[in-house]
Amino acid sequence: GGASAPPEGRASGGIDFGQWRSADPVAYAASFQTQIRQRYSDGRDAARIRADLEANGFACEDAQRLDCRIEIMERSCAIDWYVVVERARPEPIVGFDKMCLGAR
Picture 1 (tube, rainbow, N blue to C red):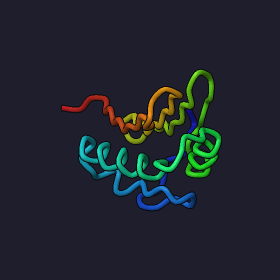
Picture 2: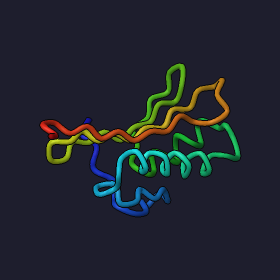
Picture 3: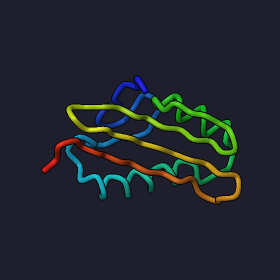
Picture 4: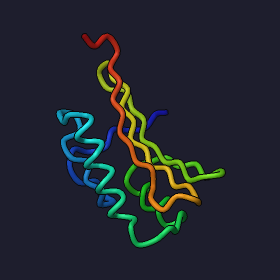
């Protein structure tokens, strides 16, 4: 998609994206997951979660599950943040992927 890159640090909607350009992707993914799960620990209201994520730059689709993503290309890297809320799961699925083309 044509999403714009999130800030490094706190977005206007309150989610802290941290130093995502320089962070180790595995460690970053773990801390991002912890932050998002804590942020939405008080309820399963998908509509509220969707509105909050969209305020932080995510694009959401709600079919069988709420699926919110930021997908960008930067330099030769595809970078993807995602939050998926499934009705049957107690916690959202949260991830961060960074795939770089031509990485040695």
